[in-house]
Length: 138
Length: 138
DNA sequence: AATCACATGCAACAATGTTGCAAATAATTT
DNA sequence: AAATTATTTGCAACATTGTTGCATGTGATT
Ligand SMILES: [Mn+2]
Ligand SMILES: [Mn+2]
Ligand SMILES: [Zn+2]
Ligand SMILES: [Zn+2]
Image (cartoon, rainbow over all chains, first blue to last red; front, side, top):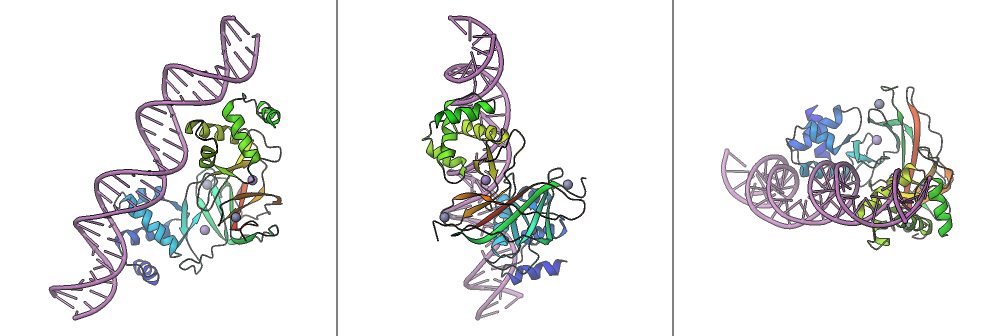
């Protein structure tokens, strides 16, 4: 919904612009995570590379999307489901990356387990990335 | 030990060369993981950028080092402790990255927990990356 | 010592990401 | 509704990171 997207942007004190609306739309209709390159393709080069970089950065800062580390170190992004806000992310769910089709899933129902760290170490964030074959590729 | 390093290389059916020996040495004396840039610095530009890339690739393939995904998506490498071999890694331990000093630790004693995946998903690999403050920076 | 297989360095390129700045657009005020 | 202000965008230029082909050099094998 167009209005819903505008709401999200306003809530984060961002002005409602064409590129931001379009990119948020893409995330909402995507079933998995998106990389910078995916967005470039799906926007048909309507927006400058730099604008996409800056939009993604802004969205991460504002808690609208979160980054997903990957084994091959390519940056991916997905919508935050919980109530994330500026500087405070709460996306403590497991991520799954399919070795076959490359789709990155947010397994929102599977929370990352507690890890007991050695003495002297303090945890701030924890990421769990599982890779293998997804339900569509088996 | 120089001889030990030569042994590792021969066991992996790699010829013993200057760059490989030096880079393996660096990993052995490093307490944490190393990025490509770290190696470039510590070799004082004695070897070509490309050689370092190819050496790291080869070491990963042969099961001498393993990659570590990071939240900021910069590639890091660390020595494999277990008996990893060509195409078969068994480094199922947790990794810790210090937000302050940037050191990446292999927490060899902490194994990654079992994750129960949704129906249809098959696990091949799992990475756990914890970040926060390390024992030296607290 | 000669041969062979492999590793290296160089050059050239591709991909990815960053920065400064002027022009364009959105939000706010009058 | 028009003017003002604040923010966003596109462009150019640059930096960093990673890849490939090929000639040369070095290590391993005979
Ligand atoms: Mn997610
Ligand atoms: Mn490790
Ligand atoms: Zn798949
Ligand atoms: Zn530290």
